[in-house]
Structure formats: structure tokens, C-alpha cells
Length: 349
Ligand SMILES: Nc1ncnc2c1ncn2[C@@H]1O[C@H](COP(=O)(O)OP(=O)(O)OP(=O)(O)O)[C@@H](O)[C@H]1O
Ligand SMILES: [Mg+2]
Image (cartoon, rainbow, N blue to C red; front, top):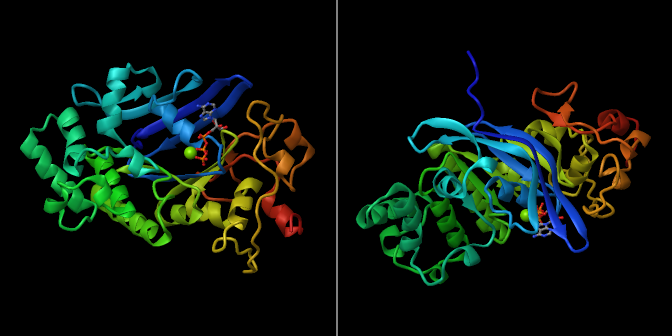
């Protein structure tokens, strides 16, 4: 049996911004694949390239100052005749890409208040992609919009359709955004900090909703967040980004219980619940230092200047992302050092 090709195949994606003070190398050779139905959580400090790399895939990086300096993004979507076909989103004409964005890849961004139009009812906003991309008539689109509000568990959907965004709570507005993102039954939903602005309880409700939707609809998800707890709740695979690169990636359990990159370890140690070491002790600490200036990234491994485990090689040569020895298949890390061995020897305490 041959495995089906991935839904998304990002190859060596690189993005730069030309600014007055120099070229910012925001994304530096990001490669990964996503299977149909897989949920990928992407984490990393502010400025690590999480948002820019998805905006680049979708043709939404402002140009200028932005510039895609390399790579391919193969997405297995439907071609205009409705056949499954992998096409490079970076090489696609804007009018095709617009269709992919609205219909085949759903998007949910952080701030629903600024993404929703305050002067349009929720019904009109959910109906828009349905009419535009699926060609539904007004009545059909409204019926579908009501089903979508039901789907995202907004009570009393028939009545709520005619309400405006300000009549919804923050959590409900984010549910509406998810409904819009799912309107055309995309194969892939991309959410960027979709729960960050919400309080913890509402955030937990949205995470529970996404878990249910995954079971019901089975779409693939890319979920970008600062919150490793959210990743633990919804993702199959986690990918850690630093300085525009992937520094570790793998099944959530493997990466969280056995991190192999020091930056991943730092993120886990700065979390209250996930930061127990093997002896079960809680040790909470922030990663010292700040992310590099991406106009002048340090040579070698960009985390080396902040990394208590760095070896001389880390300062001169960037490590490749490679399968971790002694872990599950698909657990990849970029590191010249052997983190478990160093920890066992008492380093980095
Ligand atoms: N329009 C722009 N002009 C110049 N630099 C930009 C622009 N947009 C993004 N960048 C730079 O690209 C880099 C990556 O930014 P990005 O928004 O992808 O980070 P992020 O990982 O999403 O961070 P956050 O967690 O804060 O959302 C940063 O160094 C940022 O300053
Ligand atoms: Mg971002």
C-alpha cells in the first residue's frame, strides 16, 4: 500500500522583508508536510515567523516590503474541474489563489472584532463565501449559515443570524469566525492565535469545539499559538519555530515528554503544568535573553547565544532538522548536542 501524498507539502519556504534598516530574514527554509485530517500545532516566541510563513503560503504577505525568496507550497486541492491535484500555491495566479483561500483553506485569525464587518449581519458574512465560492442562492446560503452557527454551538441560531457582531460575546464572535472559516468545507483550516484574546474558560470552550469539529468534519488544521496547553489539547503534531526555522517537530507526546532541542525544553520549562522534570519536580523559568535581530541573525544555530547547552559547533554551523535517534519516527530536531545525555549529567539546572 502506498501512502497518499500529503495534503500540504511546504518545501524550503523563505520570506524576507526589505526595511529601511536592512533585510529582515523572517522565514528561513521551512519544510514540512501535513496529512489529511492531521492537526498541527505551531509554537514559538513572538517574531519566530509563525504568522509570516502561513501568510506567505496564502499569498497574503504585503509586497513590498515582503518578498518570498524561495520555496514551494504544494497543496492538494481541487482544480477548477474539481479534481484532486497538488499545486504550488506560490506559483498560482492571484485569482486562483483567492478561491483556494476562501473555499479550500479556511482561515481564523486572532481578532474577530477587526476581521468581522461591524456593519453586516452575521448571516450576510457567513453567506458571503458560500455565494462567492459555491454559487449558492440567497435562501440556500442563509440555511447553510444557520447550520454553521449550529455547528459552532451558537444557541438559537435562526434568531442570531440577523444580529451584528457587537451583539455577540468575544467567544461567540470567535465561533462565528470559525463558522466562516469552515463555510465551504475546507480541507484545511488555519488558525493564527485564534484563542489568544479570549479568557481561559472561553478558550477552553473553543478548544473543545475544535476537537468536536475535527471528529465531525475531519479537516486538517494548522493551529498557531503561544499556548502549549492548547497544543496539548488539540494537536497531533507539534512544530516549534525559532528565528524563522523549525527547530523541533513530532508527535505531541514525544516532543513534550522528550524534547531534544534546548529551545523546546525552555518553552516547556516556562510552563506551569508541563514543566515537571523526570523526577516530577516543578521548575518554572523563563528563557533568558531575547530572540535574535533577524536583520543580522547570529551564525550557526540562531538559539546558540541563549542556549546553556550550546557546543562550539552550534556557534558556527546551523544544525539540520533530522530524525531523533531513540525516539518515535517523525520526531525531528535540529541540535548538535545530545539533550537527554546533558540533562542526565546535570547540565542546565
Ligand atoms: N511588514 C513587515 N515588515 C517588516 N518586518 C516584518 C513585517 N511583518 C513581519 N515582519 C517580521 O517578520 C518576523 C516574523 O514575524 P511573524 O509575525 O511571523 O512572527 P510570529 O511568530 O507570528 O510572532 P507573534 O507570536 O508575535 O505573532 C518578525 O521579525 C517581524 O518583525
Ligand atoms: Mg503571529
